Image 1 (cartoon, rainbow, N blue to C red):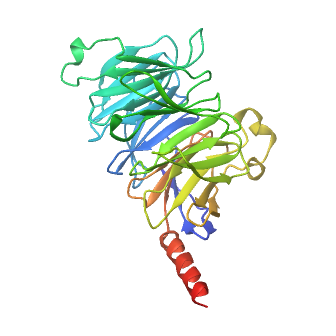
Image 2 (tube, one colour):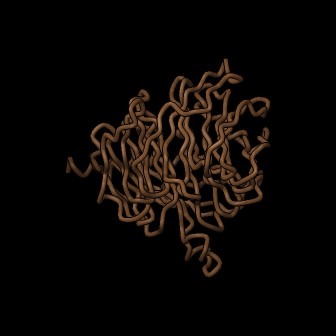
Image 3 (cartoon, one colour):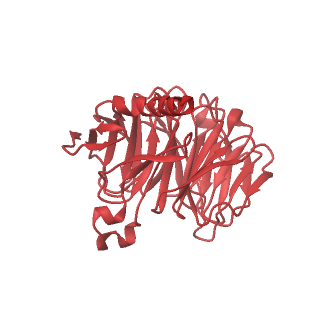
Length: 353
């Protein structure tokens, strides 16, 4: 890990990122644990890793996959890790030791994984290649009896017609929310596999990411149509849509009430990235204020598209993973935390006049 000399100055103050070079290929997903002290990452180099989020020091790696690791999830108490890979497996790991505890075989690459709250179930998402249709599987999980674990899913959920890059458990495990290349967002009943809702006509192109707010009352989506959108979880009402002027790969919501911000990242896709300079490729992470409905600023640094974003649960930092193989951990400046309150105060003053 190294401190980057370049500082990014804007309404958010000066942000000095920690550049973490531990992966040999493009990042596919990064995720903080619930406490915010660990950062988990996976990439196209087959080896998921875990880092100290404060300084970017690598703690360990998880060896066993033979293909791109597309997705990961860490459980509530940071003891277990799930990974999904292009080697057609989902693996469960002991976080502390790096031991692989169990492997679930699939018939195609696994594009997404997720623990249900309570660690009694988890989900996996099957890629729609090699004659497979995009499928969400719900599995039983008994951490105390992994040797006799059933290798058949509890529920098979069908309905999407395109690849499903992200599926997440909703509040209290009562629903599963999924987004797809088919431009729809769907809400499912995890017990029956029934589709409760289909959101069509809102996203113009394939949806690349879905992330909840800390309290799960809101969620955001990133889309190749350049927009990051904010929705209310309960009603699926669209609250905001911001044009980032670049195809987006990921978006996340700040967990702090006094920092009502969205972050979004992407850029010109990897296929055509060699034809353009970093500035033209629009590889910055953009911040949007969803209370005032405006852009706050942007943070540059990656030399290729931003593939994945994650806010630390304490809200004082965020991390980005790029096509360039770097993770950048950004500890946010004091100006960032005061920007919203200053704006509110300015409005108050103008209202009084």
